[in-house]
Picture 1: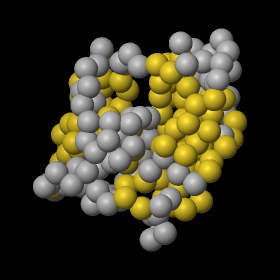
Picture 2: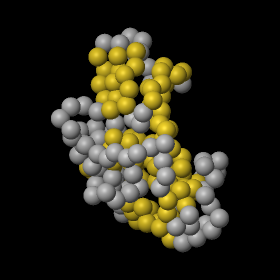
Picture 3: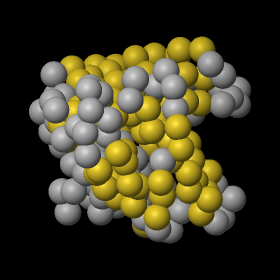
Length: 173
């Protein structure tokens, strides 16, 4: 509990984290879930959440991971993004272990299949494969880097896939 890297989590909180009712989509995703899949909360300097449909911006809300959006009745491909500014850092110039977990929409944790993780030290301009061993990623932060961005791809074994990118996942000091 309370072990980073912190990222989106879908713990069982008694109601769905996302829903669609007629022409309304609602989201309430814990953006700061810990390595155990627990919901988290933290003080942020700023945050916004944007919903896109077929690449077109539908709406934007202030806040991290939540909002209610009016959407067209027709089917489409949706993408949700959240941008958050907060202060957290790890040491630069040395090895660093990052735990990885995968949650299903009901909050249960599964072992990711086909897990690949890329790392960027220039805020996503360039990416390189990271060393993945079981459920951890071993990173070697170069001296002089200011932040770490992570991009992961995995499957859940039921046909579901996820691709998650966290630009500036954490700062380096």
